Length: 311
Image 1 (tube, rainbow, N blue to C red):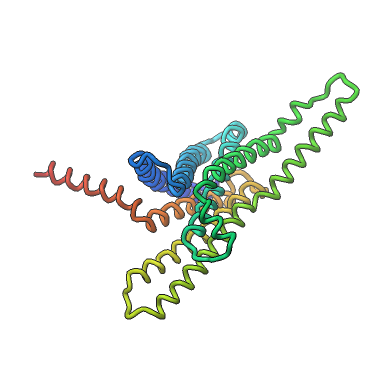
Image 2: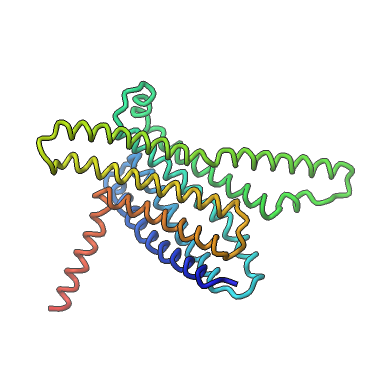
């Protein structure tokens, strides 16, 4: 039975997901219009389109799942929804993790001013690497969803049921060993997007901070637009880092902790997960003027329409 606090947390998660749908829709529309207008696919827009589309679908998926959890009344309904929703939830969650990590890596390579040979090599080749990075992310996320489905729902046991053969037990053991090895390999690789994101954001903050201190020492006065832009960039990157870490921790708790269904702990993690994903989207809009133009035009159109109808 859900407690009132769990219902409140899930309701907050629904509201946050709806805000995430709006924010990611804005980013997806702005980035797609840029690519369609220029008939090219810049690497930054490719990453942002992948990230916003995966989060847009994730928030739709999450809202539907949370509504079903809030409104359901019979316990037997839980198994059917879990079987349908969990593999998709894993796929979309891990996609968001990987695309968010690649966005941090791209920011670091393009903005940071390090002079190491490997860093310069990446800066020159990042445009060609981005499509392969995104494809790898999709494959890793799809693999995670498949392995999770096999591990949780026991598909491998159904496929290796006892047969009238003398070696059926050996075949079942071999299959289980292979599946266990795949799961162990995947669990070992799970922190990779977190590692890429943390390292990239820390390096970028370090580079921006060094450059900002240099500008402060040479500035003729306060209110320098370039200095303010660098401080805004540092705040944005630091916000990305904190939100990403919280998102990763909540996702791991939801996947690997023994929370009872619709418990307070699970509801809190759901709310924090939706809040971090939406918060990352809002910071992305706030830090990029291109993503602010579309809401401004829509708002201006609404104001003009209201004035016209009121006259």
